[in-house]
Image 1 (cartoon, helix red, strand yellow):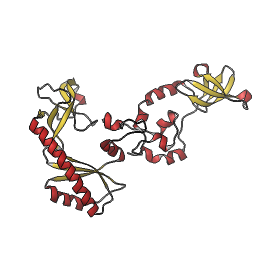
Image 2 (cartoon, one colour; image 1 turned 135 degrees about the vertical axis):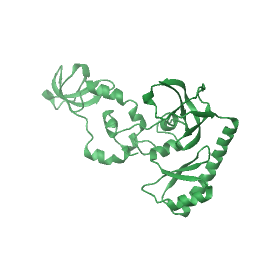
Image 3 (cartoon, rainbow, N blue to C red; image 1 turned 90 degrees about the horizontal axis):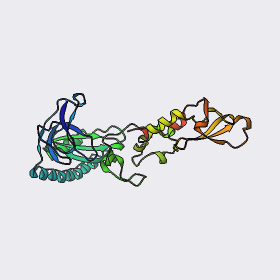
Image 4 (tube, rainbow, N blue to C red; image 1 turned 180 degrees about the horizontal axis):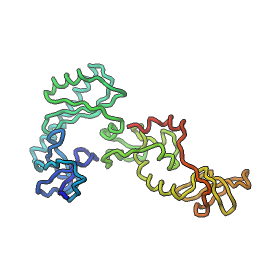
Amino acid sequence: MAEVIGVRFKNAGKIYYFDPDGQTMQKEQKVIVETARGVECGEVAMENRQVEDRTIVKPLKKVIRIATPEDMAQAEKNLEKERNAFRVCEEKIAAHKLDMKLVDVEYTFDNNKVLFYFTADGRVDFRELVKDLASVFRTRIELRQIGVRDEAKMLGGLGICGMPFCCTRFLGEFQPVSIKMAKEQGLSLSPTKISGTCGRLMCCLKYEQAAYEDLLRTTPKNGAIVSTPEGRGKVVEVNLLTGLLKVRLDKNSDAPPKIFPKDEVKAVRDAPIRVDKKEAEALKGLEDK
């Protein structure tokens, strides 16, 4: 076991472990730490606790210090530099006629590196742009191409639910989301219904998936052949949450389907849930990062 604290560098960003070096840290306290990118100022998101060694990425680096007023002033100064760097970079992108969109700029705390995040439809040759930026800022320059999900996380906004994006509020990392999840949850496969502002599948599809998977294990699917108290029939509609099934009975196939609770129905031959090829092709881009 090892004593650690958890530090994050962005709102709803990933939490990284650091050695508190014998100090007791409070949540939301600012600390100065050394990362792979250089010296950074982060916020304590997880107070001192013991964790198993196997959960730690070694070597576990020690906290350099609790942030001082001077450190906080430096962090504020860096924010101003980032705003200026953003403006300069946009001008340089236009001058080089590059097909890319600048999303965000970050200075490392020690000003040893400036990172420019951008989106683009394909690969971009930005070698000349890097040279230009290096001559202006006189420090190491790094350009990183990001996906539309990352762009939404950085910029923020409101989802179709009217709430701020989950990714900007509390999602530290993106979870895989698939068209199959939407199908299993009985949602409309219209892109406008199941995609977020970023144009990809909504992250919230993941939240209730485990509950739906549990219900699917005990509920006959749409198209299943079942035995009911009134005879054999075929399931034509399923409501997983209420547990009610609409069954078209074989003995009177022209009559309207009858509704049965799933506890009164026994599957004779269940049916799989599939996303057909046309649906998959039409919605293919929604699963991309």
